[in-house]
Image (cartoon, rainbow, N blue to C red; front, side):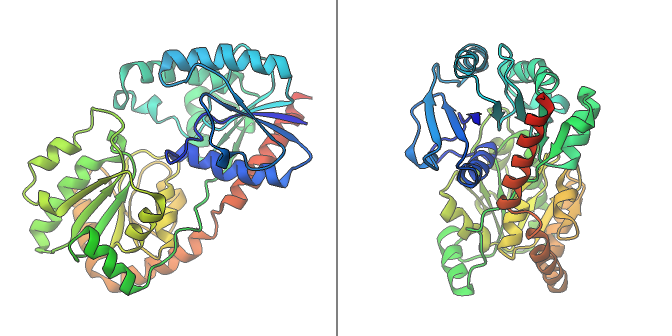
Length: 377
């Protein structure tokens, strides 16, 4: 069997959430199924680390798809022509984009449709493209995979999609995330926070991640408690309409907030594993991988109570209304001072993390591939 895969987001040292899903699932699937050929379709020169086995054939198609106009050209012309040439049994798209000029059976992984609810969070051309084409992708694809029951329900309601067409394929978490001995934690804190305890956030600095309210809540936490805790924010600013940078400049405790930008994954594990807590109060998530990473590090979590986060965190997080600065600040104070609560959340996180592994994700995605092939018959 021939399976063509959109691998344009497999970018060395630039794996975002969808790129990481692509990496973790494909490296397992191609090794588990050596009897099949996989055509990995890149839009630029690929890195050899992404060619996971001998049954992978790498293909480079131009132009590089870095803009909505180029997305359209790449999928509907370059990819469509290639698919029509090799005639694979299936086209798998881990980022949900599918070529509209090809009739090859397709499995689109639509992680969430945050742009449907929050279009103003995105630049004009990006949101225009998403709002125009993702309903079409959802309709045209043979099957859809998504990463939570919340996202499945959202796609069904928003796009009037048959729920029987959608498979839930939960994300996993990387085993590189492990607890650190206290002595190593002290070294990390010495490097990043002048030896002080700190809260940590991991994610892109985009509006739905709620960084602005997080900063305001941290300011309130500092004023109310007099704590010396700092706040470390790990992530890159993707879009220019995020208020976090300007807000930070006006903060009374701005020197206690550390922006690291994107850091190497191995380093990020150390920073997370040395934190007092992860504070992840996004108001829209299709999943929420940082919760699982914190669970693996034995780090307690404060999370938003909207969309998919309660589904993923279960009883292993302290939930807040992400639109309430007071609730976020109070939860930071509670999780910082209440040792019994911290122990309970860490214990629950150890149980919760084993429910989500990349091995399970890869198997569920393969099951969805098999359903797609059956659906075309």
